[in-house]
Length: 269
Ligand SMILES: NC(=O)c1ccc[n+]([C@@H]2O[C@H](COP(=O)([O-])OP(=O)(O)OC[C@H]3O[C@@H](n4cnc5c(N)ncnc54)[C@H](O)[C@@H]3O)[C@@H](O)[C@H]2O)c1
Image (cartoon, rainbow, N blue to C red; front, side, top):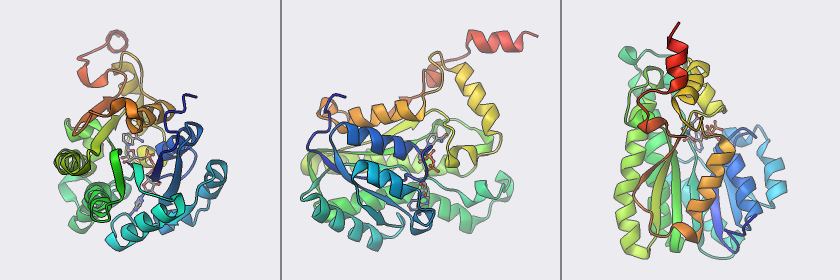
């Protein structure tokens, strides 16, 4: 424990169950002295698991569908009331594709679902940023993060339309990062995380195989959800004030490896 977030206030989106990356972030942020509200879509809250996290972290839970600007306005307003001031950090940890969930082949996508994918997993980040901006909800030197995946840059066939959503997400971080920096020195970044065993992750076809492949292709091995939470905490802290408009790789070296000894051994049979 380093007290890295002592006195800081924030909002954490996306803790569904204890495997969720956002769940681990909430636990670490709490340990590091932050106070925050927890939020998720109303349907996710009905599962009720988030209440035990809320109790541990002494946090209130506020329902918000991240695609609804009305819900987001009410979330930001209530959060500032509950926490007693403007915010220092926001984590967007949200992803969902109906096409992936229903196994639609890439050559036969349902376009209504494609738009849902983009709205939930990409555009919602702009809605979060724009709401925070309009309500003047962020303190100077605040930090806003979303979680991404390398399928934004490289093709992973089963990732389907989520690849486009992640490309959109990363682009929004760059564009809004400019405006938020000029406005009140708020930084906006995405963290591109290794495959991680969570509800969203394991919903992608062939996940076990590509989890193992990524692990062998990463000199340090896949980054875990806990390790991701550590990185998020550092990015929310005052130790990273000039890092903005970046897609930050948190992947054990995967993205810059051509091949590894482990894979060579596996393929030499
Ligand atoms: N698991 C992986 O392999 C992996 C790898 C890289 C990046 N990520 C990203 O990390 C983030 C968190 O995912 P996770 O792996 O912790 O899985 P998760 O399933 O635990 O979290 C996804 C969350 O999105 C929420 N959500 C869905 N629709 C929503 C809506 N309309 N409004 C508000 N919330 C909504 C879900 O309720 C859930 O809490 C996602 O952006 C995901 O794409 C995951």
